[in-house]
Structure formats: structure tokens, C-alpha cells
Length: 387
Image (cartoon, rainbow, N blue to C red; front, side, top):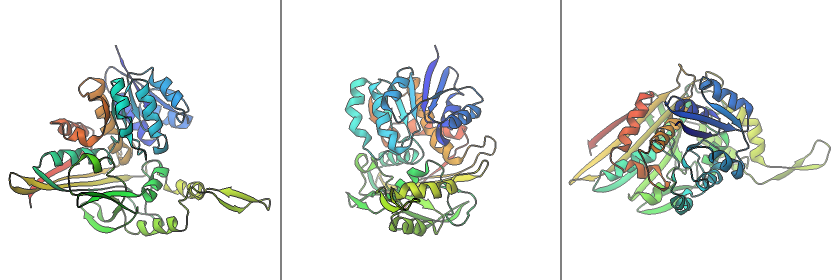
């Protein structure tokens, strides 16, 4: 009997998810989205091998209805929809694997998932996702872990004025990175830093010099891993940070409505973030065939057997010219689909809400995920050295 897999969201990442899952013998894949154009693109990417359903995924009731007809569900929704979708899928009693960058604490639903016997893996993309798995594996390999550092960015291969950036995922979620307070760990305590703060320059082979800044990417790692110092920073081409700080400073990222003169001489209320989304997001959208890259480095330092060592995972992934899939969509989608396969086949089971760093601590799982990523052309280099 075929395994019915449902993908929520047919955007850049969801479309790649559905196409990858449709390669699995015995999987019947359905993808849902409210936008017909997204569904058409997803169907074309999968060679017509997926069923498409138009649905309002802002409705938990609709998600629950769709999930009830599936055996396994994958989530590729914007962050603002992530938590409600997670709850709806868990309440339907279906296993779930999700990439949403939700602001809410997904672990609040852990007991609900356990009570329903549901394995719900969250934050299972590239970062959060693979960054967590590698950090978890690194921490578990040491007798005493000292420091965890994560640096990651999705960038256009060609820098262009004025932003020197384009969004490889929902632009609204990029703005979240620039506004959401950043949690880091210093001397064993969680502290909060302003997003876009503490910039530093770093060099990456094949890319050059990038600037790194604080974002709220540690997420659950702040609580689940034991290291006195932990930080996650986003990477951009030099100059982008200052421009975003200026836009934020003048209030253009604010969600609080302001009054402005209307066309009829009256006054109208406008949310600045809606305005900048209308004006700026089209300029952040990749044109068909426009190439991007993903760069990431995870560094875990600690002591093992009395010897101080450093474990490093490096990724440099480029746009796939064969399939036309962006690097960010592939590096984000594939960890989710790999874990979804394992869950659907009964090869991974852990009832509750599961964060990827805990998966990384389980023997052999990260190695398998890295192997599967390599088969799809996403290759991490791994190095361990004395320091």
C-alpha cells in the first residue's frame, strides 16, 4: 500500500520537497498551497508526479483536514503559520517534519505530540536544521564542550547594488532575522543581543570576505546543548548590514501602523513593514535561472580524553543548473525530506516534538543524513583537529 505524503506550502522550498519525495517508490505525494501559480510550478518541477490541492493553509482546520488523509506530513510554511500548523498536524495524529522558522517555542507542544504518539521534527532545514544536527553531534563527541559557533548565509552569486542580497526563502522571514532579538550563550547564561549586532568579517574559500552578525538562530540549542559559549551569526556580503540597520532605525521594519496622507486628502493608516514589503521584496526575488549559493560553517570546540580538539563542518553549495533549483531551496528541503522518509518508513521514531540537535546526538543518524545529502549533490566537508 502506498504511503501518502502531504507537503504544506508550494513555495521555493516546498516545491523542491515535493519533487524529492516523489522520487521515492511507494510514495504518493500531495502538495497544498493557496496560490495556483505555486502549485503549477511545483507540479512542473516534479514532472507531474505530485497531486496538487488549493487550500488556505492559514486555517488550522483546513490543515487538520488535509493531514487526516495523509500518513506523513512535511511543512514548508512561512514562520507566522508554523506553530498553528504544527499543532494542527499533531492533533490529527500524523507524523510531521517541518522547516518553519516559527517565533513560538515548538517544544510547548511536546506533551501533546507524545500523547498522540506523534514524532514531530521541527526546524529541520539547513539553519536551523543541519546546523543543529552538527552542533549536537559535536557536543556529544566531547567529554567537555567549550564552544559552539554557527555561521550561515544564502546569497546571490552575483553581487548587485543596492542590496547586494536576494531572499532564498520568504522575504518576510528575512526581515524577522533583522528584527527578532538574538539569543546567545555567554559564560553559561543565555543573553539577548540586538539583531544585526556585533558584526565581524570572515573569509570563506570560494566566496571571499563576508560579514557576520547576530541572529536568533540558536533557538532550542540554548536549552538542549551544554556549552558555556554558543553563538549563531548570519552571513552577508559586506555593506548589507549597515543598510538594513538604517532601514530598521527609521522604522520601515515596524509592524505598528502609522498615519500618512491619503490620495483623497484624508489620512490612512499603513504598516511600514507592508510598505517596504511591497517596494523592496520584488527586488529581492530571484529571476528564473538567477544563481545563488549557500555557505555555512559549524565549529564545535571541546576536550576529549584530555586533548583539546575542534570539529568543523563546512558547506558551500551552488545553484543547480540541471534542475533550476536554488541552492537555498535544496539545502533547506533535503534535510527535511530525508528525515521524513526515515520517519515514514519507521526507521526513526521518537514521540514528541524533536529538535535536530537531539537527532545529531543519536549514533549514526547524522552520518546517514550527510550521506543522503551527498547523493543529492549537497556536500559537507568535515574536519577534526587538535587545538
